[in-house]
Amino acid sequence: MKALPVISGAAGMVFVGGSVAVSGHLAGAPLFTVQALRYGAAFLLLLAWARFTGARLHRPRGTEWLWLLGVTGTGLLLFNVALVRGAAHAEPAVLGVAVACVPILLAVGGPMLEGRSPSQRVILAAVVVTAGAALVQGLGRTDAAGLAWAFVTFACEAAFTLLAVPLLGRHGPLGVSAHTTWLAAVLFGVAGAVTEGPAAVARLTAADLLAGAYLAVAVTALAFLLWYTCVDRIGAGRAGLLTGVAPISAALAGMALGGPSPRPLVWLGIATVAVGLGVGLTGRGPASPERAPGRCRPGVPRRLEARAWRRSEGVGPESRGRGDDHPPRAGTTKAGLPSASIL
Figure 1 (tube, rainbow, N blue to C red):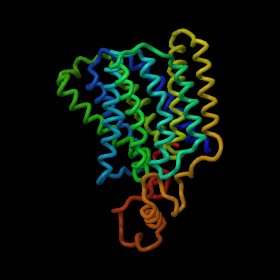
Figure 2: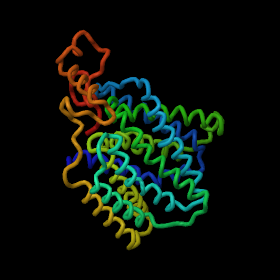
Figure 3: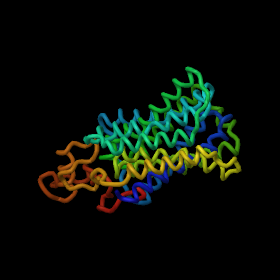
Figure 4: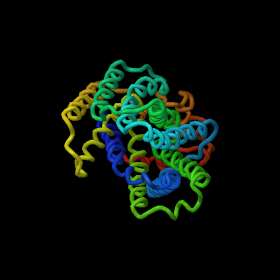
């Protein structure tokens, strides 16, 4: 198992977990408007990164639009709505435990989308990580509506990763991150204009803008790239184990900001998550996406992967007379240099 992709995914989850305290400052802000600004700013940052590194963003085509809308509509738009609505019926721990169950679904569904059989070792590790994350979060009170919103939160969090798997083969981590952020800015902008009105921007305070800026830079632009790089390199199943890092980061961040020291059960949960990560991330992992021509990337049919490889290497009929109409291999720039997936 390569260390850099694991570090990438863990770092992304650290940013996500640490954002809990920051998001609390937005409780009284116009939800859709501030989210539209957040995702719009994140897209501009990703676009600037692509230009700086010379990476090429490919225009979505065909069914890719459906996958992108699925990621954006569920993993970003509906997820944020579920958190807000669920908080009115359930304590935060209930929603946190729902999200903590995501590793199990990713351990099963991720490999299936990638054309592989689920690993029993990774599934076992996912159960351990989920148990540890539940101990860190604790259990809270809720009602029937709260449980329903908790389930929606769980499904949307899983969709954010699973629906992106078929897109990573052609667009790479940077492309998926860029397209989902601009789509999210549009969707949140429309929702904000309809429900909050165009004047909602004027109601944002300096604290709201600072919190939104942090979410745009660290939790969106940077964390999206880090997370999708990890998923692309080690597979959605193993990457899903790293979601257990988020509640640990949230607990430690709360303590660093002056909160009480975690209870013994929290420390037990942290140790349990560490055991699960050790079980699931050691040993032989799935094949690296830096593949030879016969090994296809997730979501890309074998014949298309082989054809793209022949084009990029200048071999075979596909490489003659095609000019710039066909992009280079995912993960590389036009000149064949590593693309903008930070690691």
